[in-house]
Image 1: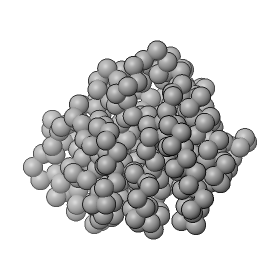
Image 2: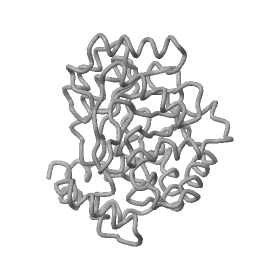
Image 3: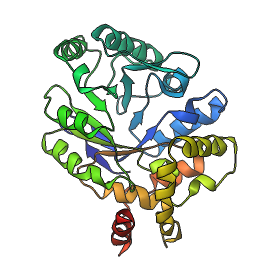
Image 4: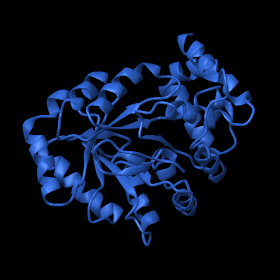
Length: 304
């Protein structure tokens, strides 16, 4: 596993991180399997783990805490999110008030079993919510030693551009993968401003090459249904990239990760999985380069 600096935070992170969310965090996915994925990721050199208070109906964050129990977390950068929470009945609620974000951070510490959160990201805030009172609350969390670095996870370019100009915010997490090449200039500006850049959805949710149609288990049905209901446009665009699954010497997932990591402004590509074989396959992409001519084929497919 190779490592990159996370902006100006002082953290070095594995260039591929594990997202602990979605089906991974749901009770219907056996906890022993979920925990084994985390332990194997650590064994293979992963140091960045991403979760959130609202993920998996609120179940992902405490599950990650149980997976980390008894493990040496000194080298790990555990990132969670505040500002959204599971409100029951499948609903996600928002609370970016200073008191709400502070309470969320304190709950996350208990759920994760940590003395301090290495990274707390605000989950999808509007620009207006990033006001002086909220930033002062973040500064107080850092002064109390409860959080070491702050960031914003947003897929809104205007929000990321605003965050780039905020010295008290250290990290941005954007959707960056073969289906969203237009994020590259925004990523470059953020990195030039000293921000650490996390590439969320680095595998494009598996939509490249119609992998959504590869059903082998209950989790595949769940992801396929989500993709077809919420991300149909991405599934259609992803069909253009079927050639990535016919390359010699690397799998389609490895090629997708190699494409993201070819951007030197990205500190870490975050991906999720519920299968041990997929985890090992994906982590092997660290240090891989795309075969000759593939980057050009990707660019052509992106232009449509």
